[in-house]
Length: 159
Image (cartoon, rainbow, N blue to C red; front, side, top):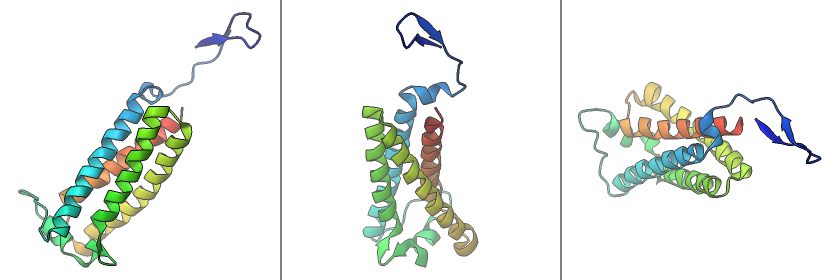
């Protein structure tokens, strides 16, 4: 990689830094935006079905009904999915700001939100596996958007 010397006399050689190519381009913020948008859609669906008094459609998979009707599906009478919707909207706003401005602060904010999200979805996954004894495919998909989104921001911060 070359760049101009500080005195303007010519190119200055700098060592190449090993980093993923996608983290240095618009691909990383675009990927994070797509993952956050997917999280918004999943959380919105789960919130809407809960507020309507319906159960999420799981298709041939079982477990969504058991998770959705468990005592852990609400906190203070508010569906857990509604908290996920608020979280995903906050992440979406942050990663869109990163995508539009290239701001390192926005990446750091998205990383911090993602780290908090990882802790929450890890706890909720623990509840599914060891307390409720049922797996919700929608919840797994949502957790994947959180984990992958955090991974994208972590890789982008390494550059």
